[in-house]
Amino acid sequence: MKNKLRKFFSLPRTITTKLTHIQEALGRIEKRQNENINSKKINDYEFKVFSQWGDDGIIQHLVEKVDIENDIFVEFGVENYTESNTRFLLQNNNWRGLVLDGSEENISFIKNDPIYWKHNLKAEHAFVTVDNINDVISKNGINGDIGLLSIDIDGNDFWIWNAIDSISPRIVVCEYNSHFGDTLKVSIPYEPSFSRSVKHFSNIYYGTSISALDFLANKKGYSLVGSNLAGNNAFFIRNDLSSSFEVLTPKQAYKISNFREARKENGELVFTDMEKNLEMISDLELQDVETEELIKIKQLL
Image 1 (tube, helix red, strand yellow):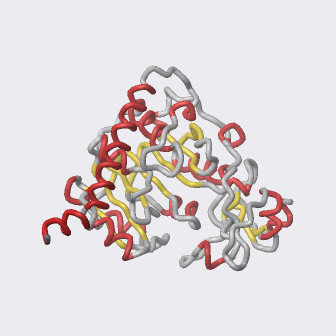
Image 2 (cartoon, one colour; image 1 turned 180 degrees about the vertical axis):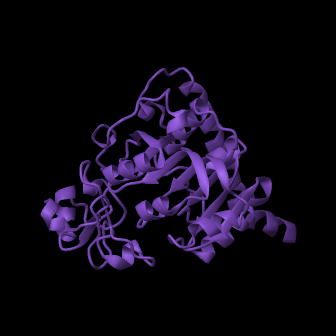
């Protein structure tokens, strides 16, 4: 009886494991199919395994085209890592890396996931700021040239990438907020303790524009090669490795996000369009990252 009960209660984990294996297998099939595509548009290579949108496919395409010497990644803002930009790299390509999240519970989940002993993965609890990001990365034994950096922290994304100087990733994936358009170089002003859901109930006041990321990328020696179709992640290649890619302007790379995550004060989703969303946050400020001028969002409407 005890053995039967043990088997019964282990079924959910067994089913989850089997589904994960199926996900990985489908990802490998899609990757092989992409090898027959000859396109300069990174969106043509999109597919999803563990990424939120089609980023897994784009990343697989980029690591095939870019000469990667060190198969190492750093990703932060991973939550419990069941949905992330680097998990397929870890499991399919056998990369190693570091993931960071501000929740101890999420990091505990990752360390208790079989993935943690099956692969060379480090998971660190850290609420990243411009003051600690380089130390957090370095103390985990990662420095200099690495394969990929993925930034998605729903807030200070621009400022954190700007502060990073301990690593030199060959590929950078960074979230942008399509509400801020394709022209203005703007970000939320830096606040060390910024939390998207705490700062404003709407849940849409966060992050940076794609033009601000391109401005920063140019300063750091990177070229914009596109964004995902979902309109929330931009992709950059280090300039010494970008000759085989079509370099895009922010206007060319920009995609309007159609997912609807704006909320009422009571937390309910409102399913409104971008113009209505901007009206909700019209009195909040953005910072021009080039001039450092503060601009109210209502001035952009």
